[in-house]
Image 1 (cartoon, rainbow, N blue to C red):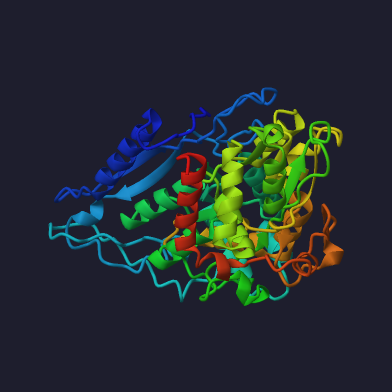
Image 2: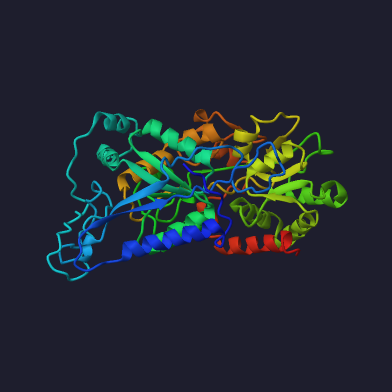
Length: 501
């Protein structure tokens, strides 16, 4: 598959092309020729926004993706949107079926046509209401999966899985870097091999913007959207474009970790660390924003351009880190500390892995607030302790991983989407994330005996352990209400670090 360069902005060449294709698709879908009854197939190029970089060259500052080569999970260069019907525009036959039966009894779109008064149109049929679905015969491979689900799942869950098999695939919009999403898709397919997951990688902002725009036009390209920006998830929820799926996993997450209606489950979170190059750094590493500002003030020449942090315009991590700093230090004191950092001219990055590269290769001596799981997964295997070390930050414990995959409001493949959602939030899925990616799960049935990973300086990666050591483990209930803070903090970061004050 062709890898497209990262879309830098709406006016870039690729950005313009995306808009043109997007508008063309909506135009074709919404055209309704009279007295015509036919179907069309629309081919939508999927732009995997990946910019390849030279891992051996820390001067490559075009940091829009992480530091590894990855294969696209989208096996073709296009997603086929087949059978986009123009037929319902003709005649009275389209009908207004519920649509729930068209996709194996889920939230299908069957029978939606029939808005104009042409004659002799074909019958669109009744989509069915989904509540009275015909019971299906369960295939052996489906039963094998049903036998592995937790015992609190409903007795007829095999029916959901059988319909998932009939649907065969889902499309997921995600803001995750390639190998992260690739790993959990593979883990899901080991559990449930008959549902193919097609991944469209976008930035966090573009997941929200693209999906919201499409949904507002009545177009539901993804079945799943997956981002960890709690504010963006809250906005999607308020727009009514997420399905309130009554997952059997809902009851195993405390109120802190889910939206009021239970639609969003914040399945896990990620502690943060400060990293340093022991060959370059004099003295002990600063453990907090306050300590770093003090060290810079004591010896500004040693720190001039010699430390790294997230780019506040591109990184969700940065504004959420600032939100914690704001509550720890107060707005005034936090601003004073950040002014010191801004004066020293930090190198700013979008990804943890690139920051880790720079620290390990001695291009900077220190990085503040890096995602621990990236350091463990990608930096630790590449470099020795003589090149890079890290430990839990004193004032940034967790901030970003407080969302998860969500089923969209009207998915084409509702049962397959539910199967993926359930696996991700199940003990099986959460134990995978904890042990494979060093992420703290919030599922109430995953305990210390299930966890093999430990966090630098804090011990086992269990919620009970991590939360006992800090008050700054915020759940979805906290961050989802931080929309105003997000805007203000991103603006403040820009003024200080880009605008010069």
